Image (cartoon, rainbow, N blue to C red; front, side, top):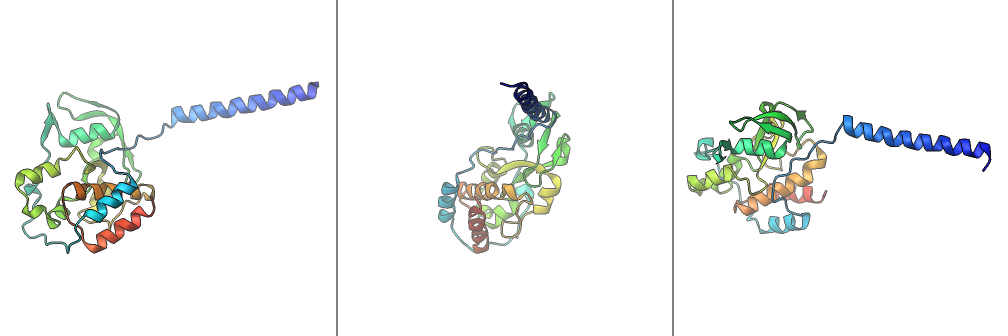
Length: 218
């Protein structure tokens, strides 16, 4: 190997090492956010199967609806209520006080890409809103069943998101509202479908059409 070739090889090696070091520094200084992962999110194939099994029916009215008819947030474990359990589950490096409320951590809103270290700025979204559930069959449920639905930690019904995205959504179904973060719309559709299927709720035709369109993007 000539001197010129040796110098060329050394230069390329230094450049390669420099690139690797730069990647490592970026990973340390700007770590990737942890995705909120509610349980029970089905595969696309399973979601399609669930959706086909959901009864398509004209949506009922909101007459008689009140959030008080879906008691939440209830104590789940020790001093931890449902909201606190979701904040712990969906956050990164979360620490809590003796009352179970987070004292430290960071949260990423899958709906709109907002990140925060203030848990008070995030809401716990009912993926299928309580009012939507009421109009889709929960009106006839017992209060005990509505409480179980409103505090469901076993299925993909609860997720920590920015307050602004949650309030923008309000009680809308996917025919009129989807996350502004397009990368999460497929997952959102699967979560919605799974919750409605697991709880035996109905869906209106516009909602089913929108969900099929979202699944087509998966």
